[in-house]
Image (tube, rainbow, N blue to C red; front, side, top):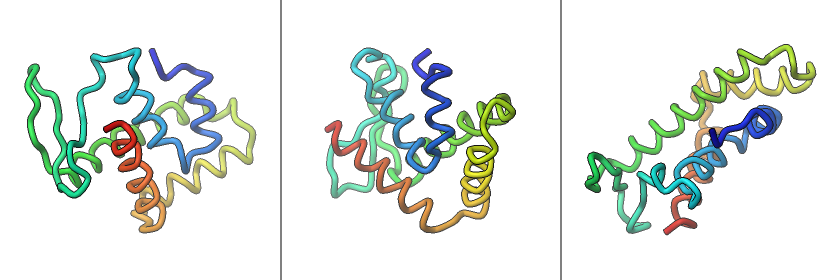
Length: 125
């Protein structure tokens, strides 16, 4: 598993930058070509490509990125809930604040996560 315990602990401690880092680690990792299943071909385009049954298919970029972010956030939150007591109180409250902003669809937080996620795609073109 790429998302080791040590790695996930670091993500919980710095939750605001965690999701794009997780996306990079999973989907843009040369050591795991089988996970390189999503890509962007054109920065100006509003589409991404997702590998499905060994074929590249175009998908709506906004929806695909949203779904990717939700998926990684779910993993992050699940890890946190299972290990909450092993984190110092300050990290627990930082993570709780982060999740609260995610739940409230905080515009700034989502904009930052989206921007950083797009940069991961661009830097991997």
